[in-house]
Amino acid sequence: MAPDRRCTEMLFFVIIIASSSAAAAGDIVEDTCGECSRSNPNVNYTLCVSSLSGYPGSRGANLHGLALISAMPLRSGLATIASEARVLRDRAPPGSPARSCLESCMEVFRDAAYNLGNAVTAIESWRYGDAKTAMSATTDAPVTCEDEFKGQGMATPPAIMAKTKPLFQQGVISLAIISLL
Ligand SMILES: *[C@@H]1O[C@H](CO)[C@@H](O)[C@H](O)[C@H]1NC(C)=O
Image 1 (cartoon, rainbow, N blue to C red):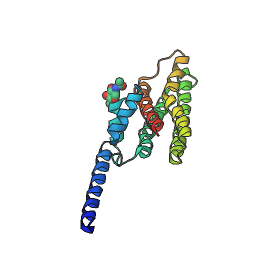
Image 2 (image 1 turned 30 degrees about the horizontal axis):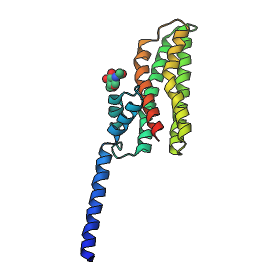
Image 3 (image 1 turned 90 degrees about the horizontal axis):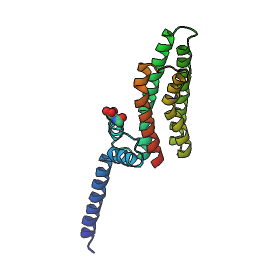
Image 4 (image 1 turned 180 degrees about the horizontal axis):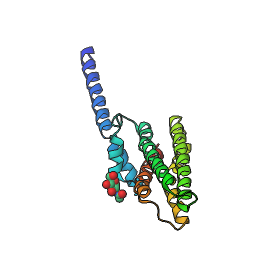
């Protein structure tokens, strides 16, 4: 084979590889969210795509990177719901059952934030089993808070209620992505 011809073939090969990886990178968010929602009907595909693609770097990320990115909406969601619980707690009369429920919820959200940190550390060090355990604990937090009120025969305050479902759904998405690793 003439060196010239070999060089041309090599160039074609490089172009094919480059263009196929570019196409894969462009669809990583949709592909991953699609795979997650097929394997787990609780995964909200629309929320998955919109929350992940909002972060810079998500389009060029691999699965490992996407798992880390999926923890970010949870971090901000937990911070928001925790500060909501604090505001309500400060307004509740001292010694009231509502106040004690809100205090329990604040503790639940603090633990959830701690577990989320552990989940991220575990992903970063490729300990995916540990990541799943920690992320499951994080995902349970909104329901655990609601149960505090149920246990007292009280309705969960609407301001908390409005944030528990989206938070839970983000947790389910993150858990589904970790499960693909
Ligand atoms: C899924 O997420 C979208 C976007 O956040 C939301 O509008 C929709 O209500 C969610 N669907 C369910 C079933 O929760």
